[in-house]
Image (cartoon, rainbow, N blue to C red):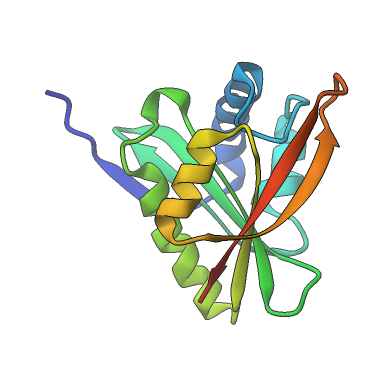
Length: 162
């Protein structure tokens, strides 16, 4: 039996390489992220580790390996923030997302966030279940947003009120 030991901490610059590896694997697998273009280390640092509207970015380290990360950034709407979560494909359904959200929720409250928005592809069944399981509720849909190949896919908007 494998013991899963996960700790969560703020992301730092050197994490970018492992975060890119994880996210690019998710992108290559397809169907679970709106991202379709592979990331570089520089883009990861700019978009996730240190964007100008950052509230928090946490990484999960499981048995010594980066197994997930979660971003929370300010939205244009007053009191709102946007969340994005990524977990390694071979670490799904192990509670990593819940541990990340615990840290993110704490950061959101400390920052005065009132509502967190999660916008998920309608074909991302796992992502929809994850956010629903955390208590996020549907509130809107962006219809027929085309993928790079032109395939239209709805985006389900969920909210979590603090």
